[in-house]
Image 1 (cartoon, helix red, strand yellow):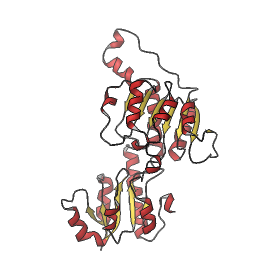
Image 2: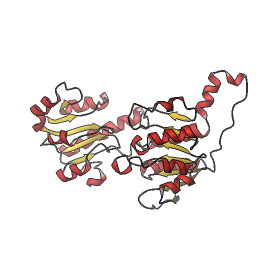
Image 3: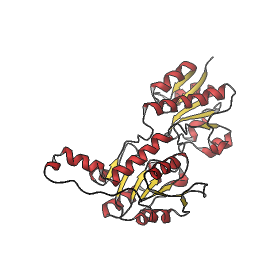
Image 4: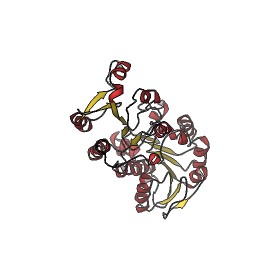
Length: 314
């Protein structure tokens, strides 16, 4: 008999189809009677697959007494109740590394689009304004300082890229690392130093709204905020207010607190670049993420070591 698993997020066919081949899948997303599904099948379910942005309540996990593993299709797992899983002995895996390069590329693209004004200049040409006058002058990126909040895999990849562009790098995090970049322990001090403040740390309760009005004020009129991590890390009302008041120069955002809902004032701002959470959205990377998500399930149920057990549970 195939192992029973429950799927709590929409999955792409390249992941869901192989799961259906090897497992007995219960689609919680599409279930018309979710309590009925749990009552009928919950006792048999041993695995759970969720998306990186999915919030998994403990009440759902309580209804799955045989559950052994949660496999996250994504690098972020801030929607997983980690303490609950630790106490219950549940394994939690994610899909790191395979999306590092793509997300770092998006961060650099947002630095370039905001710093050099490429989005505005594209509209300038498309509107026919180049026929009437010359384009605006923008900012040289070489020599500018990129402050990185969170120097993990993605943060390091961003640092490597912007260093190659002649930009300076400083960072903050839990502790200094053995890297050729300046460590600044205080986030406000990092913001005051940076021309571009790039958010690259994990989401969750510990980082919720840590980029607040004080940090944005420290970033100042010369500064641009770039977020490729989680929308919850930035206090969005404070960000909107800072942009409206000219407290900061610009923003490049790939993530938001309540996706796909975006604060309405941001749509009309010429100094803001908005992307629809596409950091890892290439065919190659999403396929690799899907393969790793399934590989974690396959390894566990075959009695083999998990490829990417969540660090907090290792």
